[in-house]
Image 1 (tube, rainbow, N blue to C red):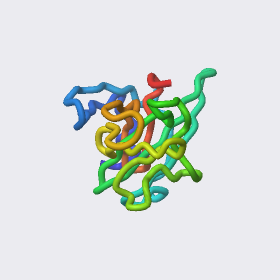
Image 2 (image 1 turned 180 degrees about the horizontal axis):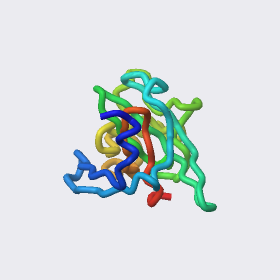
Image 3 (image 1 turned 120 degrees about the vertical axis):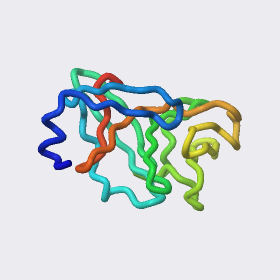
Length: 141
């Protein structure tokens, strides 16, 4: 399907692999985050989006060709997780790492597996992955 035809649709039905719920998204409400080529595999990229006076600070992780997105906020302190711009993964690129207290989180679920907040989770963000890039549904702002 070409990108032009894709944007003629009024909505997209998504399935979220993490919690098996269906999400209907109005294409007009999608907010562009970035192009696919800005993320290596594995890799991460932070973003800050603002619309209608609302801001969301988040990040995307690509791992094994799958994309995951979370708010950039540690559940332990609320501090941003990145220790260098766009750097959210540990040195092995196998876990998300908080720069403040060295907490480590599973990429696919956001669950803390090491550090001061075991069992707590990062706040997941739904994203839409299309041919031309990665988008955030506007209702998450």
